[in-house]
Length: 286
Image 1: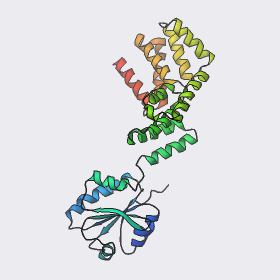
Image 2: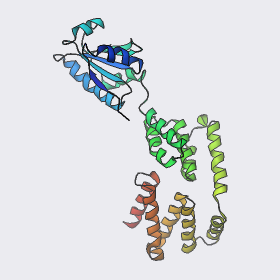
Image 3: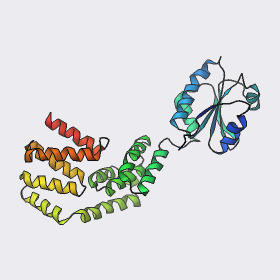
Image 4: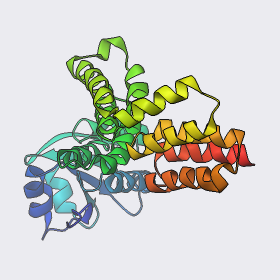
């Protein structure tokens, strides 16, 4: 996929293409500037930074007002720097002077998608083809960047449920305020309950019962951890293995520790659960 053009220098030859025609496809931010203009040199890096950050969501069109006096005159530019926002062939907003970045962002935000909307869409496309593990990092980034929108939290919880990581899903859902607990929230809560019941094989149920009767038996606890791992319930598997290692670091001739590190490796270094338990193991050992 070709990266869309983010910044262009305007001349008489390309003015119609980039200032008018392009504005029917996406917003065009026109920056009128000049070499002698000090404020222009303060503003331009901000606009270039935002153009890169938004990755083609808008086109930054730079017009040297000295070299392109005809274009500047046609747009009625009287002072520098002047910024205009074009949509559908018409100027819809703008400002003069070198505004600070925060204010520039506020002006542009009215006409641009949020920076986190693209990764959110990509994550939803991955979820649609059942690639839930791949969608999670994108959703987490979007969740943080959006200042923790509840709708994105629900998508993260859905991924956890599909990956049989019920504890993570429950923790996330428990932090959603009552005002945001809509029908989708209730549906996910019900899914967790049903999937937990369905996921409990006779082998797991038997080992849980054995553990309840003999919680200090490390062999039983180790077997229970292995069964959780086999059924892709990674948090309880890691938690039980960690408790085994707390009692005996070399349990089963090192197999408990080997299983623990293998689960973390399989989850991947960027996985939050893997990071959490890697730290716990490090604290225990060192």
